[in-house]
Image 1: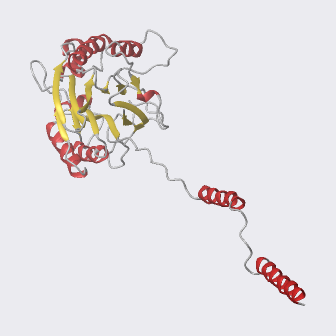
Image 2: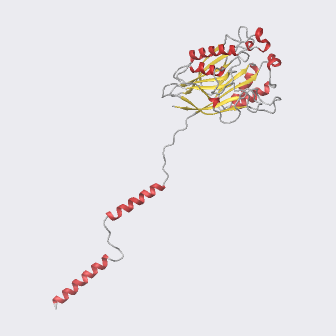
Image 3: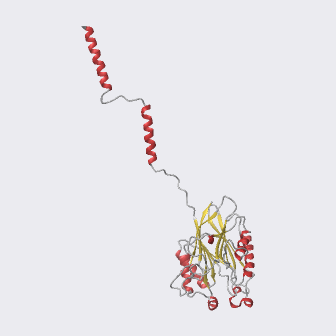
Length: 346
């Protein structure tokens, strides 16, 4: 009897234990069975989240413009004037160029117009511009060189030269360029105060009447550049060269000589930014012509050889006609402006 009771009690204990194992709270399986699904779910979740990578800094931009403003002195208007309303045009030109960082202007001969233009630029800009003037009136010249450069960056140095070669009255009459002290202006601008990085800028206006005189002036210009450029600085050449650009298939042209002369100045060759325009007119000599006429106004850029240091990378270049219905002749100048944005990289 006692043996039978013992067996009954043992059976009840085994049954109770089995029910507990298979009831509402099942026993946990081995840990290894859960580890793989948990890792897979975590990986899938992180793949769905956006990955935040460090953003590359956008390099600063040097907005540059070169423009023949055609602001002649009153004595020259009956002979060479192509636009009237100098007071109005000077103010409007100031408005148009004020958004640029580096402004190289030619044919700003009249002092009153020059001051009006500068005042307008200063009033339009968020920060004060630094100003440099080209050669002044001297010797046989009746007026200065008409060169004006404005920079949002501090100017470290300035130099000028008046060309010895020019066309004169006895060979070219009253339209001879020798009445003006044509030459070149050098300005070194500080674009990065922390590193001391600078850009050498050279502004010029070559003779409009004689190819032989231009060839001699170009040699003077290159001598001037060689004297004041610094090899570790990028270089910009701006202005009205009065030399028409030609196709790459053309040889022994005045444009070829221009490129050959300036390329001797640097190890890295100069880039003619106007050869790769971002649409619009291809020429610069006639603001009213559909194609802009001949391309005679330029911005050239060259970088130092060193792989480290400041470099100018052209981003976009355009010719701007600056047409204005308030001017009887239809535009602020007879020329188009050449504008280019350069990324300042290292």
